Image (cartoon, rainbow, N blue to C red; front, side, top):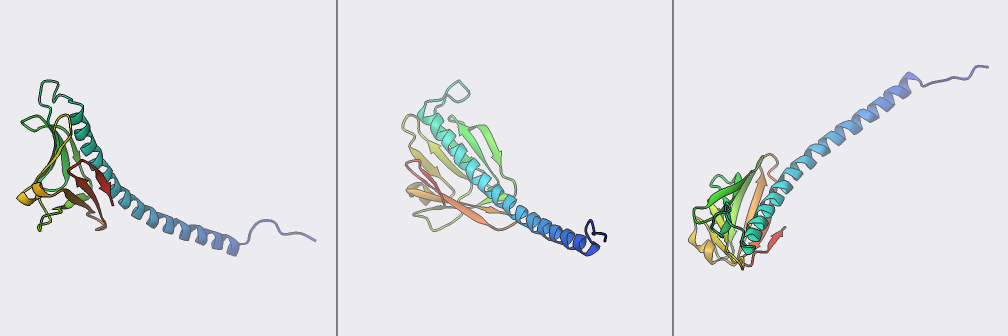
Length: 171
């Protein structure tokens, strides 16, 4: 009597079908994951540049090694990037351009309007006191502002707060 070796055609087709279904599901989940990572990266990059400006101001780092101890972050009017700025002329030291994300809301805790672009956060030398400057004058009076960044493809939105004490809190 002869024993069968190998797999039947039906068994192979079932295994190939299962592998195909798992591949499609994995690809779909990876696309969602990568879009979420784009938004998280924009939040992290923004917080990093804010921390760098604050650190440079409190450590009395000179702008371009020549002068000007004032450091800050400028959010451009289109909401698609931020600049690390320094000195009295707001000299741009570093620019971060967002990919597929946009700042859609900068709202002060004492403001009615939601979008205040262009927007600037300044850190004073030595103590790092934070000053908010936006298109709406009430933003300067707000003890806390909330920045909301949206993924252009998925519509997912994340926010974080910045206090006048310099603390940032991602939500």
